[in-house]
Image (cartoon, rainbow, N blue to C red; front, side):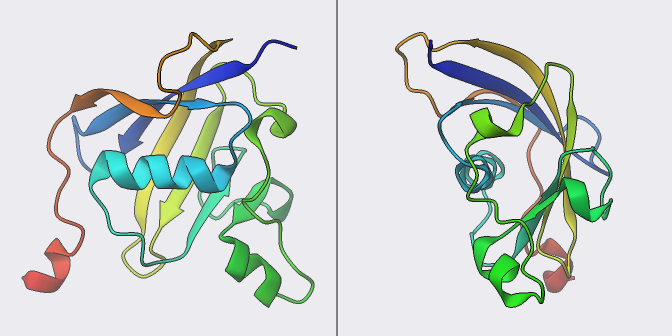
Length: 142
């Protein structure tokens, strides 16, 4: 099977014209997608996060994948973000909700724009950056 690249548009909810377009390989996990988003928005990786594959923030548990340590701390355990993208059966135009830092609730609306064959370039990269992301701890400075 040809290795695939997923192209995501990531829009920072509540901040008009702040978005990124990133690519990741299909064999990487949601954890790796989290790291790519952290890098693209300039955030420190010091908080929990979750993804909802149905596109709804705080949506149903059957679409919820979370930080691996958070997942194992629940009873019963939740779904860990350690799952490779290729195993999630994602489709083009699918919307995914990503939430980082449960207190600040940085919300990113992801749209899977394209699934394409890996072209040999760096697989995880930001290919478009529009608008300046606000500082991660701006609300704490005020």
